[in-house]
Length: 200
Length: 198
Image 1 (cartoon, chains in turn brown, red):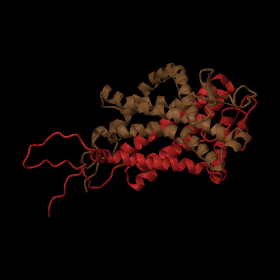
Image 2 (cartoon, each protein chain N blue to C red):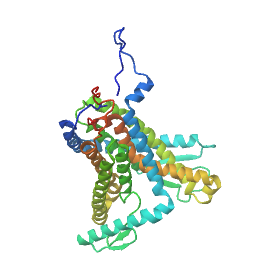
Image 3 (cartoon, rainbow over the protein chains, first blue to last red):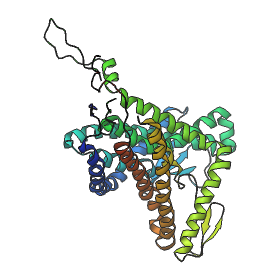
C-alpha cells in the first residue's frame, strides 16, 4: 500500500501511472481471460456442489439438488415437489464469476510492483471472491424459492422473507458482483492513486 | 499517518502493529471502502424501488433504446422501436437493467464520491464520466444488436461476459484517470510538512 507523501503537486511518476496501468490491463486481459475460460468447467462444478451444500445446510429436510448442465448452468431440483420440466429453474453459473477476469487483470496490471507483490493480494482476493460466488449462487436459489414458484413460494415464505431474498440476490447479482473487484483492488492498491496532499 | 514516537531513553524496538494501528494505517482505504459500499448498496437499492424504476429508469432506458435505434438506422438496419425494445426482421432486443449503463454509472459515482477530492473535481468528473460511460454503452448496445443479427451464436457470451467486462473496465479506468489527474486535496494532514512557528 502506498503512503502519500507531502508535495505541492502530484509527482511526475503519477501522471504516467494510469497510462502504465491501462497498458498493463491490455497486456493481461487476454491471458487472464484464457485461463478463466480453461478453468470455468471445473470451477462451475465446484461452485455448483458448494452452493448445493450451503442450500442443504439451511433446509430441513434437505431436499435441494443442483445439477450441472451444459457446462455453464445448473438446474435446481427438489425431491419433495413435482417438476414437469424435470427441474425448477436453470441458473447460468458462469455469469456469477466472469468478474474474475476483471479482478485478476486489475491486480496484475498495477505498475511498479514485483509480481510477488501483485500475486499475493490477488490470491487473497480470489479466495474472498470464491466465497462471494458461493453465497451469490446460494442467494439465487433462495430467491427462486422465495419469489418464483408461485403458490409454493407464497406458502413457504412470508412477505419479509420474499423481500429479503429478493433484495439480497439483486445486490449480490449486480452491484457487489461488479463492485467486488474494485473494492478488493482499492483495499490493496488505493494508496497508489490517493491524492498527494498539497501544501497549504 | 503519524510516525510512532520512539522513547528518548530506550532504543527503538521493532513491534508488531496492533489492531488499532493497522486500522489507522489503512484509514483512508477503509474510509473509501466504507463510503463506496454504502453508496453502491444505496444506489442499487434506490433504482430497484418500483416508483424509481417506473419514473426514472424505464424512461431513461427507453431513451437509450431510441438513440440506439437511430444509430442502427444510420448503419442501414431497418429498426422499429417500442419502449425499451428495438427490433428488425433479423433480430430484436429488450434493453433492461444491466444493459442501460446505469450499473456502471453507479459504480463510477460511488468511487468518485468515496475518493478524497474537492467537490468541484467530483462533479466535473461525474458529469464527464457519465457522458463517456453512456457513449461506450451505446457502442455496446449497437454492437450487441449487430452480433445478435449476424452472429447469433456469439450473442450470449458477448452480452454478459465480454461487453459487461468492457463497460465496467472502462468505468474503472475512467475513475483511475480522474483520481490520478484531477483529484488533489489542498489540506495539511499527517503526510504534510509541519507549519513553521511564527
